[in-house]
Image 1 (cartoon, one colour):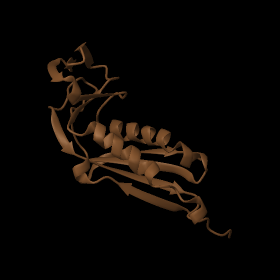
Image 2 (cartoon, rainbow, N blue to C red):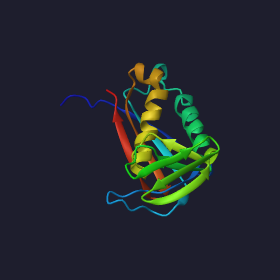
Image 3 (tube, rainbow, N blue to C red):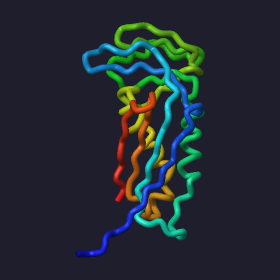
Length: 168
C-alpha cells in the first residue's frame, strides 16, 4: 500500500459581533422573507498540500479581506443586484428606491450594499465570499499550497451554507 499523503486544513472564523446585516431571501416563485437581520459568522477552511514552515499561508491574506467585507456589510441592507425580482426604481446617490417581489422600499443609499449575486441567501453569500477571497488570496493560491477552500456563512448557530472552491 502506498504511504498516505498528509494534508492540512487551516481554519479561520469571524467573531459574531463582527458581522451583522439585513436581508430578504427571495424564493423561486417570487415570494420573499420579510426584512430582517442576522449576527452572522463566516468560517473559512483552507485545504493545504503542505504544513511546512516554508509553505505557510499568511493568515492576513484571509483575515484582512474578510475584515474589509465585514466592515462593508455591517449594519447594511444587502440586496442581490442580479435577482430577477429586484427592480431598482431610483438610485440618486442619496436614496435607493427599489421593488423586491412587488414590495416598494426607499432606503438611505449609504445603508444598502448591492451585491453582484442572484440571492442574499446563505448559499449566495457563501459563494460571493468564496470568490471574493479567491481573488484576495491570489498570491497564496499562486504558490500552489492551497488546494481549495470552503467558506461557510452561518446566519444563526447551526443554520448556514457553504461553498467549496477547488484550486488544484
